[in-house]
Image (cartoon, rainbow, N blue to C red; front, side, top):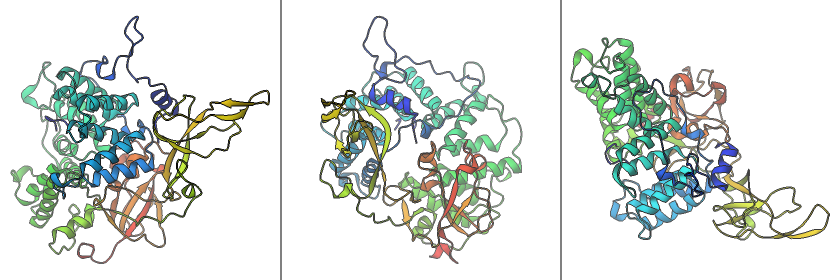
Length: 534
């Protein structure tokens, strides 16, 4: 975190990053074969006066996540639940689980592990090891790693403090698609009319594009500033150029409400005030005072202040925007919060597989299956911890085995071109663990963030262009190998819809460059007569 601010990688891209260990943007010094460390790379200076900003999506740039590593990562996140006092948390286990996930190149785990090192949660590692871990993620092309390196330069964490370099790294992260960097830089470009002129950073058109790009990726906090941009028309320098209209206020209100669903506490606080006791009655965003709505936003505001990881994708189930009627509520805090949470079906009990009956290193828990990634290694040792098997075409039927980073690959006797047996090294292929659930729609999150519900019978699925046939909680889903699956197949994308309502459309409602035809909506929980009192 910043102290003062707050499927897949392209195959060739990933091969270069992982197996050749070439930094994506590092350069070589003249007449010097030594690589410039990612922390020291030369980057263009931050330029607040750029004419345009092209929205890139982080999820399409990162390596695919190993399913078993994801489970370790989520287990570690659950152990840092705000309900558990810091002194009561099992940081030994948190570090161990996060480290195991990071070994499988789970990029979020890599960055979390770096944070644990900086916090002193592992006595064997500190700031330098954290920087090295972030550099490893930078070599993999992770946009968030560039954002983190900027924070390290801003806070003098493992590197000499340099705010100029910090902004250069944040600019690079934003250009690569990192929503947190976009949120921060957009705030700096939104400096208002008091700071007009060439010497200042006001650049409202670019700030809005950055905010919208971050918002499209599920970044909730950016909704707060974006609502101000939508509420009043502005010049490029930030000066308000016209009055608020019914249309601009409605758009700003919608963004704030969606921000609450995505975990923006400031948005919840703003709407609590707007509905309950607005500062300016003449310019308030809401159509009318509504103390009952204000009370519910207050409950959400306090929860997000306590647990910033909370998300309320089904907010409309208990707190829709006007003119929709406010559903009944029994006044219990937990009833409101649980109804607005995301949902998931009970986990399926996997049937034993051939791999689950084997002994280590061939053993693979029945929860998982293996999928070949097409990534090959001719190195003598495993370049990173993962399941590996001899690549096809070598006459070997050896099953995939789990190898730790640096563990030697086995040698085999194989036929050469002349038809004689040769004993020696072979080419190995990386296998990714995937969930052994036959492609079931099962969003995942850390324990406590989702409410478990029975899987509806019969299963009901719809295309984006259809009208909602049944009131209830609906989950959008794209194919497992879709480049945006990591930000679509998530519980925070769920929506509470009433019968006959249109399904959300990615471009219109999420601001996400995703064709409607790529998305299918699945019913997760059907409505009952009185959902807020269930």
